[in-house]
Image 1 (tube, rainbow, N blue to C red):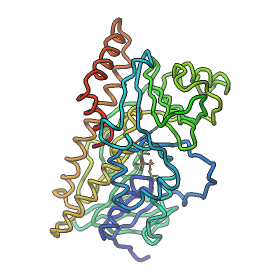
Image 2 (tube, helix red, strand yellow; image 1 turned 90 degrees about the horizontal axis):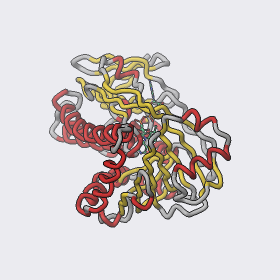
Image 3 (tube, helix red, strand yellow; image 1 turned 30 degrees about the vertical axis):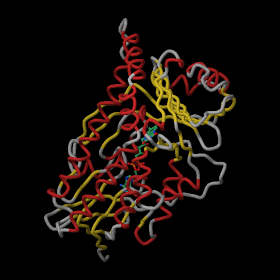
Image 4 (cartoon, rainbow, N blue to C red; image 1 turned 180 degrees about the horizontal axis):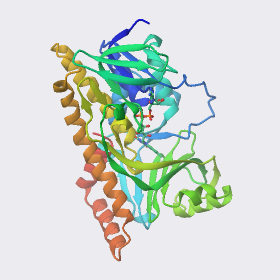
Length: 388
Ligand SMILES: Cc1cc2nc3c(=O)[nH]c(=O)nc-3n(C[C@H](O)[C@H](O)[C@H](O)COP(=O)(O)OP(=O)(O)OC[C@H]3O[C@@H](n4cnc5c(N)ncnc54)[C@H](O)[C@@H]3O)c2cc1C
């Protein structure tokens, strides 16, 4: 069987892998993308994906730069201009406003399937291989060689693995991870509420875990309820669940009128000890997984995409080997700093709200009120949350 050759082979056609592939293709790089799943089936307009993401302004800019943002918004997205975060009293909520970041919106809530579909639509079919699991990777001084499930082989100067948190290629390359399984499991569903969402994202920190309401384009809200009591939440009948949800969000959006099926996701913290090796780079969840309480996992992955495209384009411009460790180290340095900062925030918040010491909840509440009262600090937090 003949060997296929390319400059960059990307393993994993999730949002991150597809966003890297499109970014590199736009720069004229010879890329092949491999995903083990079949192409996404067409869905009808009323069928909302339960996986939705809060995309930051930085992610929006990257998707704009590779030419898919307008199509994503045209298909379906909901801009949100405000955010309310509280622990005990909705009236004491920490308030973030897009105007403070001098932006029209803090970000957009978008279904995973919409982003994925528009990325795949923009990729030329000759560069994408569906139903194509990558089985192994061999690296030597001259190049990298992938073996596919159907026995074919692909030679590349650089292999990028965006093949999920479990990343078989990361394991094969002997890269270890640090982290832990969180006590929370996320329960996700969409709800119709008595009051309109007013393009606002709501988050309450409960003793059992954070509960977020994210606005959807059709007026409903998407729920991410990370809880130590997820099993009980999943076992409740519809009526009891809706009442519990309304109580948990302290009636901020009126009664919960309707609720879709509930799905759940176990949560973890995971960070690869190395993001790069000669001729090999990790991106997206394959490199790092954070708690979704700040809605930043995919934003970090799209940050990886933007940085990788920059680093590879710059190396090509001066005829450097794009698979060399020297070139890839720049990517690792830049991303490690941002990921570590995000881990400190998300893991720190997870821990701060797990502590149940006398007086601790009072301290946390004072902290939120203090941030609310200091406009420059609030503005700084808004700009960081938007990825600006
Ligand atoms: C409840 C919850 C809420 C979240 N909310 C947000 C949010 O609001 N904002 C945000 O930014 N992030 C959020 N995240 C994080 C986000 O879901 C992930 O960071 C993101 O989906 C990771 O995308 P990825 O492309 O790296 O990986 P994946 O989506 O896991 O894609 C990996 C791809 O690799 C393919 N693959 C795997 N193995 C192979 C192989 N051997 N050969 C070929 N292909 C292979 C798979 O088929 C898949 O397509 C949330 C996460 C959870 C759990």
